[in-house]
Image (cartoon, rainbow, N blue to C red; front, side, top):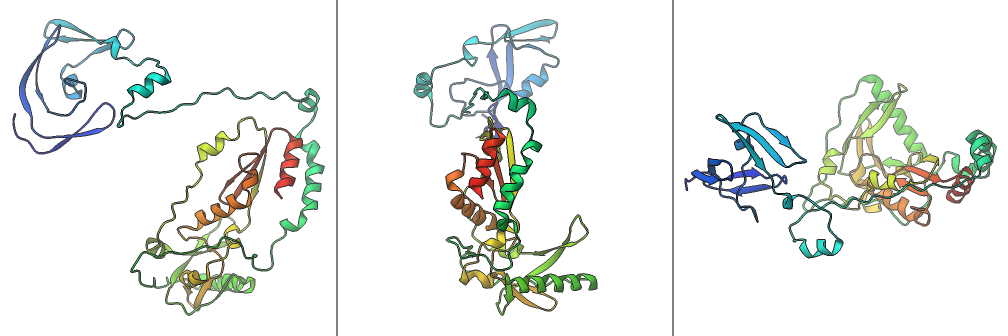
Length: 347
């Protein structure tokens, strides 16, 4: 065996197998052809050898019949037909056999096929009724709970969940120099800061922490106030709370035909910062230092904290008629009648 450097070979399963060395000029006798090739010694499990892509490319044009399990090509003036072993093809097995043959390193995919539910409804409702017919009922529902649609003029109530910023061990206070701003942006920053001071979500700060402010242009031409917390985020221990998978959420909608979407206004600002972490949210503008009393946008673990609170608040309704993905709430129902009932229960 000739000595070589270490190499990796991608197998048909997609798994990379490491090897070293090469066996040159090995002769392999097949029923209809003799193969002389250089082989790489690898652990192949129950397979004696593999003639890979390199050998296939040498054969040139080839015809493959997947149904008959044959490969046809020409070597010199001879037509060669290699026939596969049908016993190696995949076939249906029982769960009992699967459990017996499954090896610790095996990989598999679980695919669940199910029939879509067909719900019998009143024919008159289907033919004549529409969402517009029920508009007065939903307007009445909105009037009944009109107070929750009003913009708050004070800070949120104290909740069981506050946001924390856990820094990696040995981290010094994060202090990033502020950016330079054009004159027009300075005026806008001052206006937005004054609005936040008036609402009480920020206050002046003397913290050694500091992150810069950036303004992001909105579609309507206005400016969105953002704090660049990237340096702070790099020093923050990430939260491992599982974020909902979109595909799994969509599976829950089977059979539903009426959907009501609720978007929470400034949802992150409805959660308080933990007292000992308020100073870490400090941002610096051209005219002062300020810190957030509520959860600001841009921190690495903020979406997780918000999802935890949403799951806790709406736990009785989750997967029954309600899905929550951060600050987006979806009520899904089979009929308009049940939709109104579900929305009323939610608010």
